[in-house]
Picture 1 (cartoon, rainbow, N blue to C red):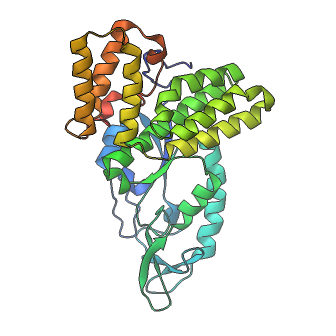
Picture 2: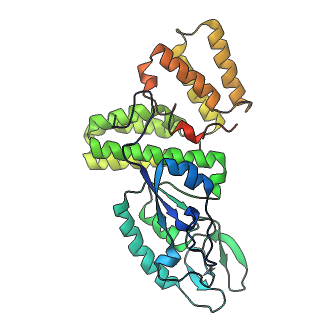
Picture 3: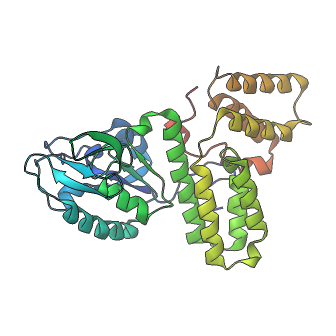
Length: 328
């Protein structure tokens, strides 16, 4: 694979993964009231593994700190950004800045973005939009967040509120690390053979998200000689992105765990098989977290040196220190 990767599935990129983030989440005092919304997990825990690129749309587009609060008004599809008291329309100012800023971010090599929830500039979903009668509905998207997602449709995005959900948190971080490995493949290799290796290493991870897209990607890689290299790389990333956007479920994980167990049917003793089946069933019943069957299977992978499984990033898709699979 790429540098920073071992065949046991562990991955430490040579360079820290770069992620965009709403600057207030880093503790920068850039909010309308000169405060911040520092997020301890993002700064202290995930921050050990990523390099943050802070963005504050309001400050960067020329508004001061402190400043008058603002909100979205009109339609959810094309809202206006208006200050609440003085009724100043900042839509054009924010839109012009956002258009330029997303182009600048192309040079930052970021692998995703964490937005500030419910912000009229940075909220990725459920932002309040006020109608002509002043009645709000949580149907909008912040102006900068919309511009960013339109410009970078294949990048993982989340807001800090949704990241409080353990499943969404794990999925976002898994997508970020998987994208970084894909970029490493593109930068260090980019060949059809390299894509076959990348796909092989990620088969079980993709299967945990979508069996259908897993099969579709297999066909794409098998028929790769029929496509130009750039078209193949783009098509693969688009399908990979669609797959990883689908949340794994307990049922999907159990399917993959049983698939892995099949590699040991002639290697395990009767008692070992019984124990493994019991642990998988306990996970199915949500009595133990995913990390429990994963740890036992990883032990057998090392013990019996099953090369195909040693390559699988499903067993270690992100740093174990983040403890993302420790929730039941």
